[in-house]
Length: 293
Ligand SMILES: Cc1ncc(COP(=O)(O)O)c(C=O)c1O
Image 1 (cartoon, helix red, strand yellow):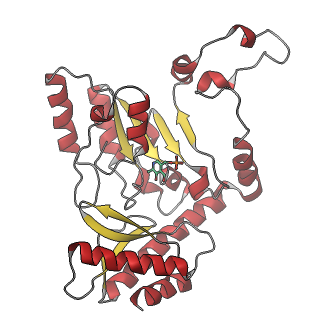
Image 2 (spheres, helix red, strand yellow):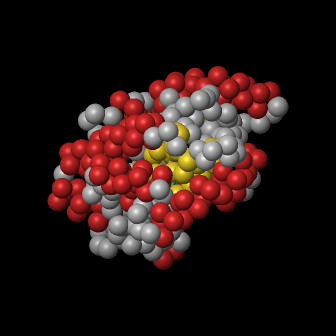
Image 3 (cartoon, helix red, strand yellow):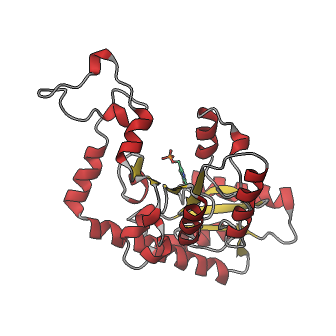
């Protein structure tokens, strides 16, 4: 994956017993997308060193800036190299249902597996993470172990597929119910339109930042995440970070906006993730006014 991978992949590698160092972070370009040539070179280099690359992770919507990797190129490369192609689409996989923006995630349909979060852009109450795996038998054989008390029977309560054969949990709640009900109630088109709306608001907010001389974008805006900072006359480094952190905290404490912050390629910035279906352009105008104040 890229140097913008979410930290959950590190946890996964450590939980798998492979260790953090087995997760190769490939550099990204100016748009914070994985550098495909560098990835190809790293695969060759690892093979030459006696390692066995297994999986390419593309990100559809990085947590820092919302960047979307070139999923078509990654799918091609994974196929050429005979590697599993996983897409971390926790933020952006659902862009596939947004008519004006679905082109941004072209190639996602080639993934062997996709992670997505209905508690983000399907507005489901926390929490309901989801993974889609193309090959159901590979999925089942990865997790299935049959203890004596859970053998299947031809009829009766134990005649279906056991869900615990598809993951680590045995007992588990019916999280999918709230997603299914929301889709039944509102329909997929409405959720798609709301994603388009948030992405348009991301563009609008970026425009406001660019038009405001005391603010600057610190990364290109791809979807609904906008990274920016207050310039602060002549301030750099830790002092600029301290000023921006103070602005963020005051905006939070005054109930203006729930901004967060992050550091991208060594640059600290404020981060607005516009995910709410109630957000209006007026709210974004207010946020700029209050940030500058
Ligand atoms: C790109 C990305 N991947 C993975 C995750 C982890 O997802 P969750 O918080 O649902 O475990 C997040 C969460 O923000 C994310 O943005």
